[in-house]
Image 1 (cartoon, rainbow, N blue to C red):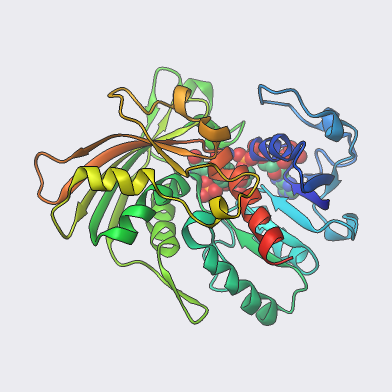
Image 2 (cartoon, rainbow, N blue to C red; image 1 turned 90 degrees about the vertical axis):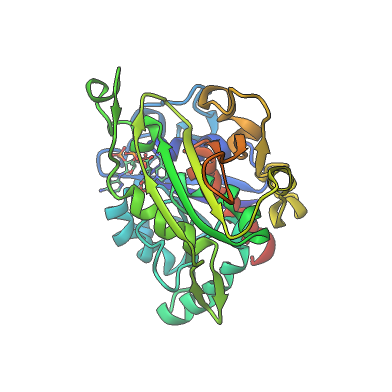
Length: 349
Ligand SMILES: NC(=O)C1=CN([C@@H]2O[C@H](COP(=O)(O)OP(=O)(O)OC[C@H]3O[C@@H](n4cnc5c(N)ncnc54)[C@H](OP(=O)(O)O)[C@@H]3O)[C@@H](O)[C@H]2O)C=CC1
Ligand SMILES: N[C@@H](CC(=O)OP(=O)(O)O)C(=O)O
């Protein structure tokens, strides 16, 4: 077993880490850290548990520490980070001096020597670790996963991008409240309402997606070259981000070919049969009323993205559109970091 810890363990994503790591065949939680508000308390006393499944017995008595590397035992190998971005920027590099940090925070994602990875899309970016350790003189390293909306979108774009020339992509999101954390959106702001702004989200979707679909030139990422514009909105859904996607290709499209490309998409995590890998990263639904967050967010344990309403655009040439749903705190956050760590554990450690 590999000993692992969670930084930001009491938060919304931290709780998902704990839920998904409970009974993991290769990883065992031995350390939990959060802010000074929680430090020194047993995890069950420090945490307002939000998930439907009960808090795992195995973590209840672990005493939460502050996010200081000297407080974490040297026999921990991997630290999953779900710290707020501003804390992650300061703390994650300190942990990476001696630990592997699988981070879900955005702080380090676009650093040149930090791999931003979705295992099904760009597992080869893990080669960047070598240059990170050399540049920074660290014994450990940091690997990051993308923003939650970006992960779901990019998993659906990858099989299209691999087979056709994309001219442009428009995406409009309807994002769950859990994406903003437990105290993120007041109920008075969201019940009976929609908020048409999520700070930084559009920029992250626009830059991270092209980066992920880019190529490694030496050890430098050259982003994909097509136009992508996003409009992001918060809706009164607890978990599960929905996205409406419009794509124009450089050529005429046979919508059935595209459907087959998406539905048959598989990659390294499926070949290696990694524990958290979904059988198919993207599930295609035929029903007119799918996907829906309540019905589709938990597809394959929340690790598969569901696409529906895939249809040719009747107005614009060479164009088609679809709707997707992905679980924002599983595939879009904790599950994504865990899959990265499983790939590292299998291929690097
Ligand atoms: N929610 C989502 O869908 C997604 C979230 N993310 C990212 O994951 C990270 C966590 O998000 P989320 O779980 O929603 O946030 P929460 O606010 O629910 O949790 C934040 C966690 O960080 C801890 N923390 C807060 N301040 C400090 C500090 N100064 N020092 C140390 N620890 C601190 C909190 O501890 P305490 O309880 O003690 O205050 C808590 O454990 C963020 O970077 C977010 O952007 C990424 C993708 C999706
Ligand atoms: N901003 C996302 C969640 C998030 O925290 O994203 P990021 O990991 O890029 O900071 C949402 O509100 O749904």
